[in-house]
Length: 424
Image (cartoon, rainbow, N blue to C red; front, side):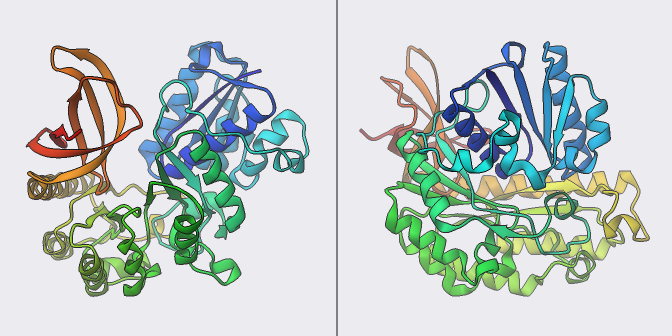
């Protein structure tokens, strides 16, 4: 059977389809680069925003228009809206998040233990649009927080950690398949181990000690999960100097309405502690514009704080009410035009901060993992990749160097990154 896998949304969704791909291959099935030629299409949906939900439906419709006759929907949107998913063209099955880990076994009519007993295959790149040099490894799922705006907790359930041996096995398989960078993912990554009395630092230390991973990166971490001594782990140069710490608002009163377990002051102290260990640490964040009840004064506090922290960039989400969340029932929802205006202003500030951060890196020589190689011209092969501090870099080389790491002297600014010269 030929399987086409597609996803949108978070890195956790990407990690999940990579694991599904490995399990299907272990059972003798092949992966398709397009929906039209597949016997089964699996779409891992997202519901974090109304736009993500709409994009999820669109992906399913696109697969059906391409000729897919048998579509399986999973992920957050289809978990929250199973009947709507089944009503879409071509959808024959919906598997909720709670049963996603058994999706391959269920689809193939196997016992879950049959898959776990298989010798793990080396990771292979997914065909089509998801050819990545980095391997996203799911180490945790679900969340025990109660942020008032978040639909993911409803869709993913309670927090739960994957055992350390299972994580190490998957990383070894990714390395055997050539992955140069391992990215740890989870809904609430910082809570790894809480359900069995351990801490994320144990997992990181074990990966660095027991695998040959050249580059280890962490996805989003909630700021209240971290203590200042946590950052001593970054004394190991294999741990990439980039932290994505979702703030959501720079106003103490707004954070309180969001039920976020942090304050502007504690967040600033955390940023300072990280930079004390790694002065080159790139800090990025998430912000929600126009949360219910957000006043002009509270919005100004957010603008002031993000400039004071001097982020290297960030994502801005215009608040959208998600049915079933406490925030959707709050009073004083802001008009769309105010939310959009505040989103634009936040994005402008982040663009300025990101440019300023890139300028500080000019003249430096940093390792770059090449993620794409396009057809050559008279200057050679054009390469694009990422530095450890998550800057996108382009350069030219006489040979294609996809999935290799090279030292690159950063010499110029591009629209969203930097250009450089490889030091062979």
